[in-house]
Amino acid sequence: MSPTETIAAPEPAGGPPRRLQASSKRYGERAIRWLLASCAVLSVLTTTAIIISLILPTIGFFGIVPFDEFIFGTDWTPQFEPPSFGVLGIVAGTLNVTLWAMLFAIPIGLATAVYLSEYASPRVRTTVKPVLEVLAGIPTVAIGLFAVSFILPEIIAPLWPGDLLGGAVGKPFMALAASLGIALMIVPIIASLSDDAMRAVPRGLHEGAYALGATKAKVATRVIFPAALSGIVASVVLATSRAVGETMIVVLAAGSTPNFTLNPVESVQVMTSYIATTATGDISTGSLDYKSVFAVGSVLFAMTLVMNVISIRLVRRYREVYE
Amino acid sequence: MEAGDARSPRNRLAVAGARATTQAMLRQQPRGDVVRNTLFAALLLLAVVIALAGLFALVIQAFAKGSSALSPDLITNPPSKINPENGGFRPAILGSLQLIAGVILFVVPVGVGAALYLEEYADKSRWWNKLIEVNIQNLAAVPSIIYGILGLAFIVRGPLDLGFVLVAGSLTLALLVLPMVIIAAREAIRAVPDSIRQGSLALGATQWQTIRRQVLPASIPGIATGVILAVSRALGETAPLLLVGATVFVTFDPTPLGSDGYSAMPVQIFNYAVQAQDEFQTLAFAGIIVMLVVLLAMNSFAIWLRNRYEQRW
Image 1 (cartoon, rainbow over the protein chains, first blue to last red):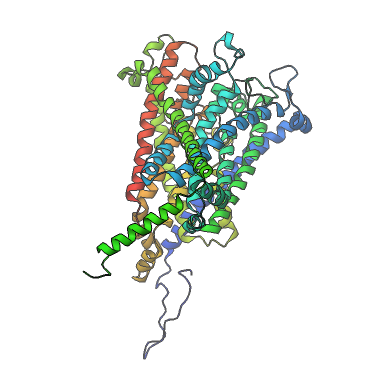
Image 2: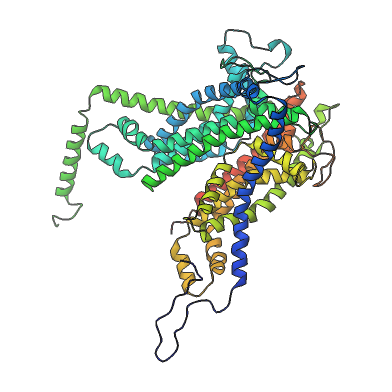
């Protein structure tokens, strides 16, 4: 119902029909509406600007490096002569770090969520959840430094029988150290969002299951978990997208050796760390290196976009079902 | 004493009897179930402990390694390559404060404006409003380094062509956290019940008067929470700043439009962290302590604010 709609009031006795419309045109009201709308449109413009700023240099890049060499090549050696731009060499690094991070983060995050929503007493819940949310705000540069100065030497090194790569020349790097750092970053995300999804499941489902004689573990795993599955998957997908896009942890802990492998004890370069270490201020605008940053950025943007859209759709589905 | 009185001895006896019977029945759970249940609960608890222990270990390690460098010099001295032990964060702190001031100036009006449009004016069945909504949700999850690329191509160079100045960094961070603010503000505005709006409109207020005098005041705690969380995210963000000109060793106080470069807390920490000497490492950890204290205080305040003023209508 819009405010400008004309509604005729019931005719008062002995007069012309009175209108409920505003007596003046209210230009101010309209101006405010447009002003607010333009704020909202700015977000669409941001997306458009991102896409334009990625695509234009990427097209220029493909004018020099053939498209199929970029997409299917596995050698990422831009500093060599002649350079080779096979993006799979650093996509593999991203997948390596992400895969092992998710392997740790999904079970821990989901178990935390199940504990918080089904097992924890209200008091424990109202303490642990805010603590997790506050800790989720730790800057990633701090997590990266923690990964390289604690997780790697104090946790991985004693458990790993082999030599640490690069140990002789100072700081060793390892994909697994970055993976564990990223896991630390995304466990609160998975836990908090999955907990929300499980708490959106109506109480009736719990009570029905208990009335049928199910144990607490069965209620949690066979009733509530499946009922909240779309929300849980959405949280995991969103966390994966965050892991793929994370920069500082991998820059500090994973190293900068492009490496076509999923082996977690190798040093790898990932897409974000290539961008962050190549496009730092002094790079000249027209160079091939400059353009390659945008080509890698396009691949990264496309990967996260797909995951974000999946996650948004899944969240919408569980909202439709239960809210 | 009447039979209907809940506290009569007869009733109490009946309740106790019923409870004992129920418990006796339920205790007949198979032994395997009991074991499995306990084991499952223990595993869950273990996961919670691991998650919390990891995060607390980070905080403790930072304090253990960085506290020796904690002194007023840390805040008042510029970084130094020659005397690392006297180095500090002065330009970085000033840079971060200016960056954040710019972020707040941009993000509060635009974010709240967009949220008001989407909640109060937009007809949600129209495709363009749906597009804006999905678009904002997606933008909230775009990697921060992509915003760095946007800042480099669009703000530093390209259409806006500001150069590597602090304002460019500020705008980049503002765009990065704008979706967070919009989403939080929308939730706060949505929580104000319709009856408030209808009451105001019925008394003859225009739509904007209703928003300004009823909806906005009621949703301010929620909006403030969102803004604080967004600012703390912007404060801790490093990657996009690397691309839009926050440079290595800035030893002078940065200005908003100075083209000599600027620095920010997380960038300075990163630059200390990648140096080999122990003194720089200690400085990096000391910087992390400063940031953790500021950020954890801000986040705690925001979450307290949300829980305290969460209105139940």
